[in-house]
Image (cartoon, rainbow, N blue to C red; front, side):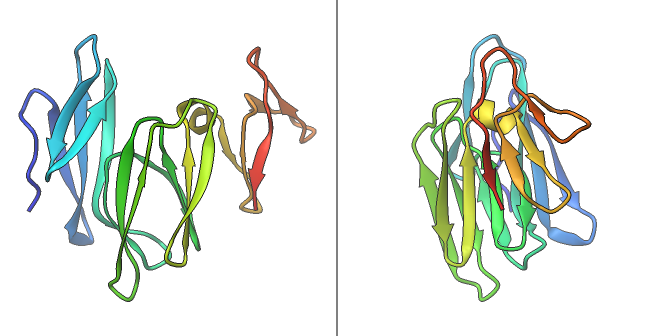
Length: 168
């Protein structure tokens, strides 16, 4: 089972319809300051006036399972998982062969990103501003940094600028 935090932060736990062992944990913070709570022994930070949606034993399309993550997954593809990583956090992944892999990281700056390996899975960790500018192209290429994409295919950058990063 899921050992959930107190009711002041816990909003709801929703199971996955076709996988009763999997769930999404919704934490909300209505306070003006960041709150830290504990879910199954792991500290989870919820920003002020925000919601955190955390996976619990969620199957990924590539056969892996996201056993738990103290942050939100943003995207998955064959061999790749993208996580928002603005605060010091961790994720526990289970490979198709049942082997567990833990990925932990220190706080990333808003515009910082890093790529880690967990067995045969690449884990892309994006700082908050990078995560907010993530674009997924039709060919599966990930792009982060631009504010918008124009009709002619060029990217538009906001007042804080790029740079443009991509991962095929």
